[in-house]
Length: 110
Image (cartoon, rainbow, N blue to C red; front, side, top):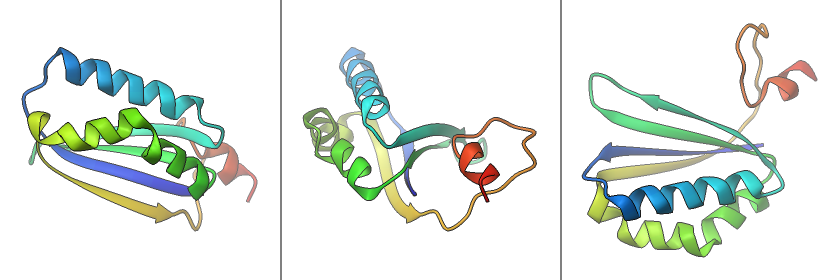
C-alpha cells in the first residue's frame, strides 16, 4: 500500500479551482486500488494536508497521469501559495477500531 500526501498553503480559490478539485476527487475515487482519503489542517500554520491511500503504485500513477491532475499541477500557482507532495509506502497500519480509517480493514487483517 502507498500514501500520497499533498500539503499546501491555501491561496485564492475560484470556480475553476473548485470544479477541477471536484473532478480530481471523483477520478481518484473511481480508480481501482483507491482506499480512501483524509484531510487535515494545521491551525498554527494554516497548512492543509490531503492524504490519499492506494493499494499500489500503479493505482496512484493512474491519478498522477490523468489529464485533470496534470492540468491542476500546471495551474497550482494560481490557487496555492506553495505545496509539497510526499509519496510513501505503508509498512504497517493498526488501531483499536475506535475510529473509521481508510486502512482499518488492512489493519484488522494483521
